[in-house]
Length: 247
Ligand code: ADP
Ligand code: MG
Picture 1 (cartoon, rainbow, N blue to C red):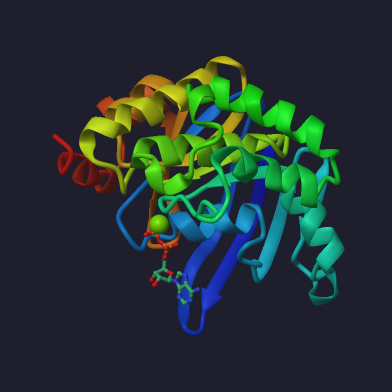
Picture 2 (cartoon, helix red, strand yellow):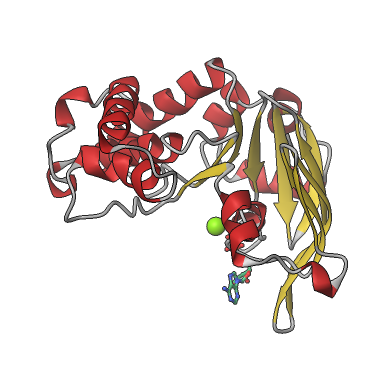
């Protein structure tokens, strides 16, 4: 469902993605782990082209982008079409503060997909129920806990009917007691067969829910494999050293 071949990205002299090749199978959950600064966010952002790679090939579903040639730089409309295939959830929830919870979820379908409001509202209600927030539809984002805000952010991403979901440290900004309710939503999406790539520091969760784990360091994929294999019995010394900080 997601395929990257030879993806490179530099910021000035800083080569942040060195030559990334990876695959995420349809319906699978892949956890991306690695130290701060290893390029995890840049990799995720490249997949929905919030960051435009310098080189390489990216495919999401049946949409491909080839950055091997300069003339392949995407136009705005292509970018928007490509981006709409992926839902992204960030560490900071980025809800619109002046809109109700339900309006936050309706915003994308109404403005981007041109859905009639009644239809978008119906979808928003279904998605809010799915993330356990049916009773908060009329609430303002400010009145919610961090865990609730993040669940709204997930519902908002799902409202665009993405083919894949990308999570960039979706629970890192939350108080520990609120992490579980967000992970439970991710877990339920996994059970429904949603294809997901998630950057996380929740190693127990990655081991439990992910099918595969990719360990990155210094802009490279150092190790990749079956989740339990990589987390319980890493092959590479760098993975072992990284994971030792979590025990
Ligand atoms: P991670 O998510 O693994 O912590 P990032 O992808 O955020 O890593 O960052 C990798 C490197 O790229 C860091 O050195 C960071 O400073 C740099 N970087 C990320 N985004 C930008 C940007 N927009 N401009 C310049 N440097 C950036
Ligand atoms: Mg990051």
